[in-house]
Length: 340
Image (cartoon, rainbow, N blue to C red; front, side, top):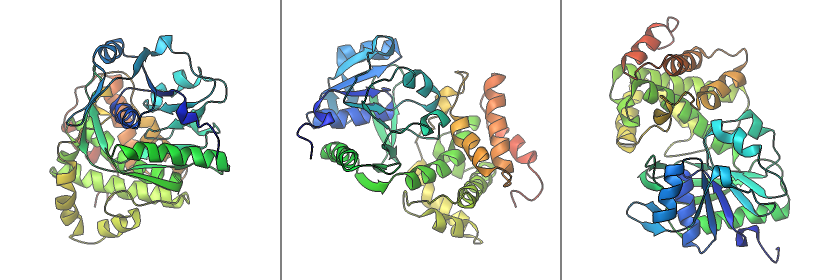
């Protein structure tokens, strides 16, 4: 074990959104020195004045720095909690030997090329106020932390220590795993089914299971995503009550999908879609979700993913209002038999 851990140095967290704020809160409760970095000047000022808060759990006061003024550390730990479309700006600033640990959804080609040893994947939902570092956990779930490649003993010790530090606050369960990629792939399976539909329709995640068209599209996307990942030979892990293999069997069994809707809807009701706030911003994470699956599929058929990607890009590029009618149009334009 190293005499001095990188967690004993200031921990830089880039991205004061729902995940960044929740993770920072846990580390601060564990007595760690945290520096929050964000590009939203209003949010940074609010953090400097009032600290960061997890609703119903309390407030902590780390240092807040605007991204333009941030000097990345040469050593220590950087937690990347931005959305994938902001990765390029962050990665272009990094230098030295600081340990980078992303905790974000989706697959970014630029990030995938790096040699960072580990990542985190959150299955809980943390909804942050747009201009303030105040978040609320709206859906319970676990944070999985683990290696993304073969790592040495020192890297394993640091990832284990990070997981243990985060677990101390007991804000969410933390599971330290040997390989984080099966969890990342499974989270993609769900995100790429939920996000384009909920964001395009302008509804919360739970409403996808209460609308007949959205319900059909959601389950069909889940099955297509599962098929793409299995065809690509990727290992999948259990996130939530069922392993993806079980979900596939349920969705292929008559009458069980309707029961699954009843089972899942309460856990999704009231949880926001993280892509929804981006629909008017000109950029979303659709390429890191459905776009990645399409690339992964290659010649393997993926008509619903292609249609979902086109739908979101059309809404964003043409500045269309989000509405349920987009889902009906998507369903009507799919090849015959895809939703049967």
